[in-house]
Image (cartoon, rainbow, N blue to C red; front, side, top):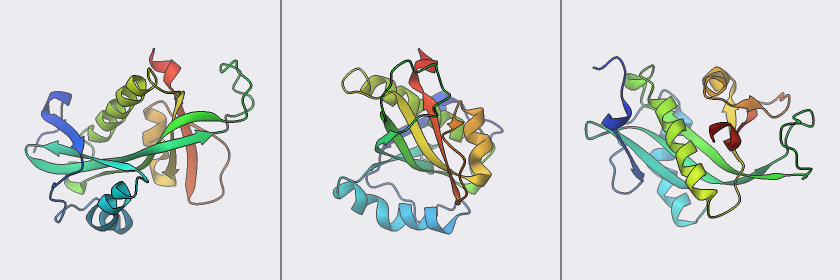
Length: 166
C-alpha cells in the first residue's frame, strides 16, 4: 500500500452506487451512517455525501450541507459586523482505517475548499465549518481550521476562512 496518496490518484464523486459494505473507519456511528443513512439524508435534501475513490475502492467520504456560524468576537480580520456568517458545513468526514495517515483526509479538505470557493461565486459562503471530534481537532488545525468557541461537549466547533485561500 502506498505511503502517501496523491491528488491525481483520487476521485471524489457524489454518492451513488458506491459499495461501502466493507468500509471501516474505526467508528461505528460513521460506518453505520455511510451504509444506512447517507442516501436517505441525500434524498431528504438534508446533506450531500461524496465518495472518495482510490484504485476503484471507496476509501473515504465527506458529507456537506449549508450552515451559518457566529465568529469569535476577537477575530478582527472579518471586518463586517454580522451576527452570523454563511458557511459550508462538513457534517461527516471519514477515511477507511487501512488508508489513514496517507493524506487522504487533507486532500478531501482541499477538495471541499475548492468546492466552497466555486460555490461562493454563485452564493454567499465565507467559511467552512465543522463540529470536530476531540481526537480530530489536531487534523483540522493542521488544515487551517480554528476553534469557534470553547466547548465542553464531545464536539468542537471549528471554522476555516475562505479568504485564507484567495
